[in-house]
Image (cartoon, rainbow, N blue to C red; front, side, top):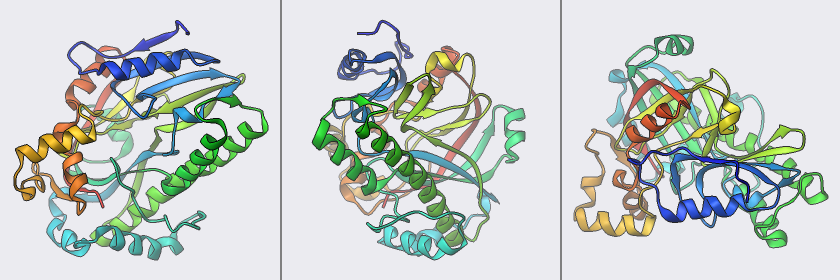
Amino acid sequence: MTSDFHIYCSQKTWLEGPAVEQFQRVLGFAGILKGVSFPDLHPGRGVPIGAAFLSENVIYPALIGNDIGCGMTLFDMGIPARKLKVDKFLRKLGDEPESVIQQMALDCLSGMEGTAEDSLGMLGTLGHGNHFAEILELEAILDANVCGELSVPKGNALLLIHSGSRAYGEALWRDFAAKHGEDGVQADSEDGTAYLAAHAGLIGWASFNRRLVARAFARLLGSELRELLNATHNSITPAGDGRYIHRKGASAVEAGKPVVVAGSRGTHSYLVRPVGNLEEHLFSLAHGAGRKWNRQSTAARIRAKHDDMCSLLQTKLGTKVLCPNKDLLYEEAPEAYKNIEDIIDDLKSFELAESVARLKPIVNIKP
């Protein structure tokens, strides 16, 4: 097992034992040179979420799994949040928001630069699980210089899209796993080269789809749309000299460029700027609050606490929630996630990032 690793998490932040065990297990994989985990670390399906690993010559698609290219894209809507007609927007989405969003997205295709293959009919969809679309308000500017560079005034409405490669990523992972399981392959082998090429295509597909969905939201809201940032947090990327960075639930970052660290639908999200020696933490940062409870235990806890499902459709922060999937409504309750302020404090105390802005959720949509 490599001895070059770091767990960036303070004692005040909840860290499950199984998550650490999964992290340590991966450190023992052949060819793994280094590993870092962030305060949002939590257990995944055999591999941890909220971590990044550096390998040499070998790649491990199992560390990324099926949601290849999952990431978040943030847009400025060019309008003060107070002027949004939220109730009218929600009425347009109705009881089947996914179909409404997808149809509107496909109508926007002709005005998009670039194309994306869609043999499975996935374009314009968000997906399930923890994927979402959220309208937020830039509630507080914490770094005037960076916010000035983004040219977004306080109080403006923002749109955050969190989704991945949908069934296409699932298909690529399934085909690879059928042949190799969780074993790695040489990056320059026939299977390694084929996987990396398909993987790169899915990174592009996922980004394109997030932009397409955002177009649909802008049209439904009658607003403008300007992309502020785009970060992928499930990927394998070359790091030079035959090395590769594997990220699972960890945003890829560049010096000086802010990224979103998402809270839950009932808490703030934050814009942060990476600082320090980015190589030390593998050019990666936490991508969100990270789960505190798994889906099954969350559903049981929240059902016991909330007899009336309608009480989950507006959070304590005032966020309006649209989620026709009842199971998902319970599983993704804000209580299932760690304290986002603790996550941000950890990133700052370990000198990994500085806060740029605080974002308040207004509407959270999970089809």
